[in-house]
Image (cartoon, rainbow, N blue to C red):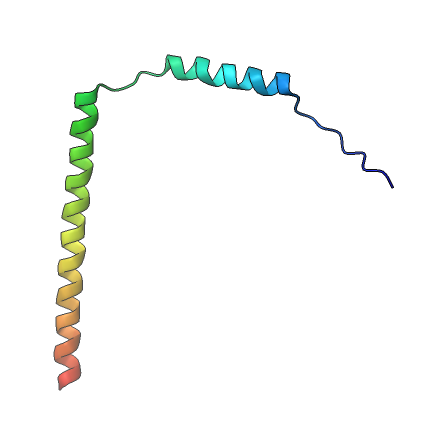
Length: 71
């Protein structure tokens, strides 16, 4: 039996997809550097707050479990 799988994507089609992709990327409204820095700071702040919250709850639960198991 011969392998009769037909190739559906040609190099021409791939090139047009790449051109379309770059064309769409040019239409994107990219944020300014300052706005990006501010948003990154907000994300890091929220992550830090939740990290401290989870750490606090974990420590409290661990302390309670330790007290209950020592009895």
